[in-house]
Image (cartoon, rainbow, N blue to C red; front, side, top):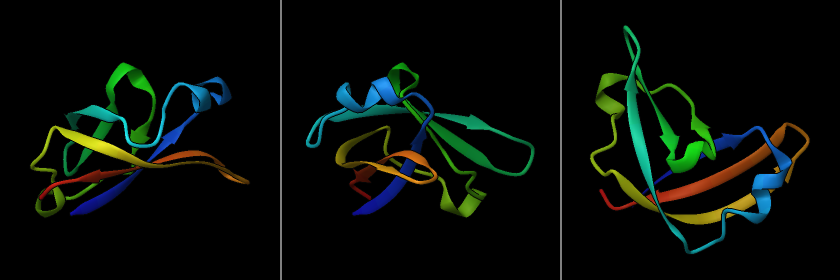
Length: 79
């Protein structure tokens, strides 16, 4: 299992994303890395190198939290 964190920019999305829910992710490429966006643009991941790319396109929400730095969704992927 692999976990990744996605940052949400809008507080109203905290009630939209629920623990245990399955969500799809979309991979996007930068010149030297990749990043992932949760379906419906709920959140965005950090940048990952070529060797760190996701093999899955769907994961399960494990945690939704608010911190001093913002709102975060932790996803778990079968890899």
